[in-house]
Amino acid sequence: MVLQLILLAVLGTYALVDYVLLTNYLVIGDLPLWPFVSTGLLLGVLGVQLGKGAPQAERFGLAALLCVIALAATYPGLQRYALVVSPEPLTVAYDNTETGYFEHSHYPAIDQRESSIPEYWQSLPSEVTYTFFLHESELGFVLIDMAAVYEKSRAFYREDGR
Image 1 (cartoon, one colour):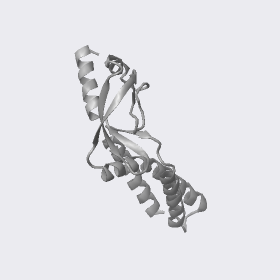
Image 2 (cartoon, helix red, strand yellow):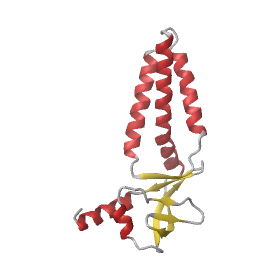
Image 3 (tube, one colour):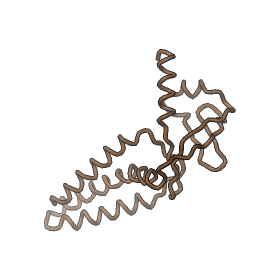
């Protein structure tokens, strides 16, 4: 039972800290489902095994919490994985086909139409090529380093007085 709580605290802390540290990265493309399922199942079973000797309700309750935290930790884990397998970003030119929507023939589209900076996206001329820095994972999704975009948008809003 104590091991379950320690594992729960460690995974929860990792998920929170790494999620906050990776806020400049945006996932595009389809995330694979199998890492989430396998991590949840593995830690759910491990939680049940570690809880032997505890009352059944507590044992399965903590195993369920461990499973949920493991699922939450998988997302930043996949982001971190993409940064490890592709430490140097690729510079890729995307076409701005409409406000906040960028397309490339070989990479997933970048859809920022619902982002929190609509005025910035509207200020960019359409039908122009923009450069993004991508980290390719080997799992079918791509990680975009949005630090440069966020810096430009902050400068835009400072100049605009918003």
